[in-house]
Image (cartoon, rainbow, N blue to C red):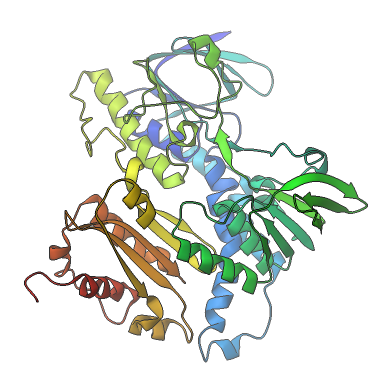
Length: 475
């Protein structure tokens, strides 16, 4: 067996692992990433990029139909084959050559294969041909293995060979009928995508849609799904599944039966911790690996877990944020430099706790950051809620003939700062970064009066919020 010693080993070459490796390498450390699938990982080939590619065509078509003049130019329907071809271009036909070139250019080593711990700072990597390499880390090992979908324990469901999100984002055609199990972001987005591609979709959610979002956002998304032809069934669950000829038959807890040619399971994800040899380190493989704010695993001075695998915020951008902190702190600790691990320091992921931005690309979009009104009240914040109908804005009138949307600001009255914001409507994802900056920076509302929004844009909602809250020094 070949034995190789390096400063840092990163398990997983997805976007998170790439960022850990890059920051560690920039910090002067010899770094190797281990990957058993494609460099670039889930986001590049099976999640963020292909799913948004599948959604974009329907969104663009709806936007054109909502504007007089453009609507008259729309003479046809969506072409699913063209949508899938564009998805394939965006995902580089699942060829990771350009990502490998980037690693080479950054001076980061790549070892293809499956990694397992055999002891502290020691791993054995088994390649697809069965050959093995032992890697020994001088300073740190970062586990960046992402997450895997959960299959509900429903009798007969596994025998249906259901789709996971990977199958849905890599499919080459839309099934005539599709049952989506799960009302979270993945379920709602893929129901939206396949409805636009021509599938007759039924969405089944054990609870409501988009848990953790403001109730008005959930209501508008449900209306959007139903307007697209999706049958939405909430507060119910599948209790039995079997196949009858070409259709899957799903029985719900109220006795209702759903027939669908294809079933998509989108009921959640857990950290990919199995088959990593964690038991060799005294750790149990579970749904996540617990870490501190520098992404270091409790009880270890050399082991880190970054991204979905730690369960803190299962979003690509938050994983990359964690990765930058982790790679920098690994380099700092290796060199004996000071560690800035106070809240909002250079080596911590403080934003994971209360300031996580997220866009759900349904119709309408939902863009949110920070706390909902209910979460803020539960946290003991003296809350004031500012609601505004986005259709009242001049920018909305220009954007579409019948723009529908709402926005909510959640204000900490005692401190005079924003602690949460939610926008619902077409293209509201582009409003989110301003709210994120305001919340993370704790910008006083008094100062926001001087951040003048351009006219006529949807950003004018900021002025309307401030007018509702009231300007200091006025009666």
